[in-house]
Length: 291
Ligand SMILES: Cc1cc2nc3c(=O)[nH]c(=O)nc-3n(C[C@H](O)[C@H](O)[C@H](O)COP(=O)(O)OP(=O)(O)OC[C@H]3O[C@@H](n4cnc5c(N)ncnc54)[C@H](O)[C@@H]3O)c2cc1C
Image 1 (cartoon, rainbow, N blue to C red):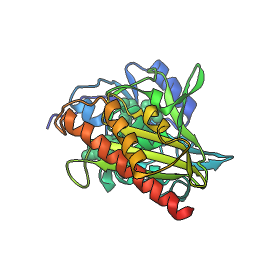
Image 2 (image 1 turned 90 degrees about the vertical axis):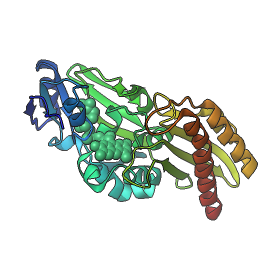
Image 3 (image 1 turned 180 degrees about the horizontal axis):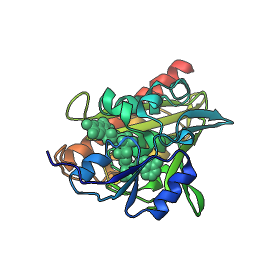
């Protein structure tokens, strides 16, 4: 195994200290759990002279329920998202996605912010955050901005943050109590595996009628995507298996996967169809039990 290149590690205790370091130190990069960054440094895919360890900044940790909004600090461990009562009750689709990431060791180190900022098209938290309409709170020493989480993803392993910017938190509106959700992931093994395709779905019903639908697919294009044209096929309808099949077929047409070591593009396309259908059926069945 290649040795790591040399770098200095800095451990700021506040966001302002971290931002100052990011803007003043040469080739500086944030590090949270390091589960993505350290292998990239070792393989010389990424270069950094100064690593700014953000894991000790209290403001970046924890999950809070505000007025109609849930906030997850960027350096919150995946394990804490997986075990959170708030996430389990309000956004179980994110809880399921978190519990599918890597192994317990990876979930103990890796963070939700790192999962997003690493910008892998297969990032398992992404489809769930996309259907939750999550947005990212980003700051630099010059100011702050909020962008939809899907806009953090620019391309494979490329995010839209400037080098002096830090992701502070991820926020999303609290879903209605009547929302039903589902997450599905397919990998080469049952566990400890990167997704060949991952899908999240969120449905809302007004009585028996589906009044809103959100579908997101990961690992099937250069970034995780929402498939609006499939969502529209479910709106204001009393769902049937045929309508769900039609929306799933639409997803298969909309994805744009690649061949790689994990799967062929063709397999990914077909599995997008299968996973979307499974998610929609699961969310619809949950809704029917509530009706
Ligand atoms: C064995 C193994 C298995 C894995 N399995 C999975 C899996 O099943 N599913 C999955 O989705 N991922 C998986 N991963 C990838 C990884 O564990 C996750 O993406 C994890 O959430 C990354 O978080 P981190 O805190 O370790 O990120 P880091 O490695 O610390 O950072 C990743 C990138 O994001 C940047 N960054 C981190 N935090 C911030 C911030 N707050 N603001 C700005 N930039 C930031 C860093 O500079 C770096 O470029 C696996 C990794 C390994 C090694």
